[in-house]
Length: 218
Image (cartoon, rainbow, N blue to C red; front, side):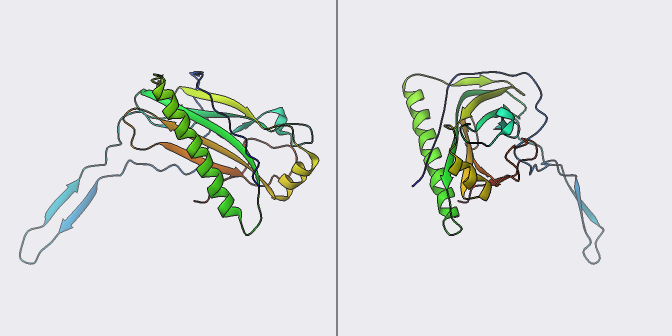
């Protein structure tokens, strides 16, 4: 049985600050240096083919702007909710229009044999709710928001207060804390669809900068 808490909002809160950390620790540099290919056929002068460097795609691009920020000093304790700030930032080179977002968190029990299955169910449920929310907004005439380059939309989400059993299970890795972010905007190549879970913490006070996150299994 899954205990699921998912929260979403359409209120906009813009931040002009440059974000200094990123959830996605696997950044790839799309700039490739020029490549020179030399073809030397027999009895023929050398031919040099120069491939120009790949030009990064222009436009806006939404992704998590930083690691989830734990509030309440990151405390994992009975009677205290897990509270986090989640940030979506335009990391592209142009503003994005018609921006919709959905952010969610969840707690779910797992075992060694069903963890991948639970990941998939949690992810699917989040995505289904996100798409439903976006359709309802669009149907109501809501055209989404405009997010300028470097600007951030963020929300504070929290679980109900934890029980002692939940605290013990989180520390033993038997209860996973999930974070989800979804976004859609005009002229995008694909939706942002990010599902991650928190590795069992080593202490009951989580340092946001040292928390270890894993991508949900598909």
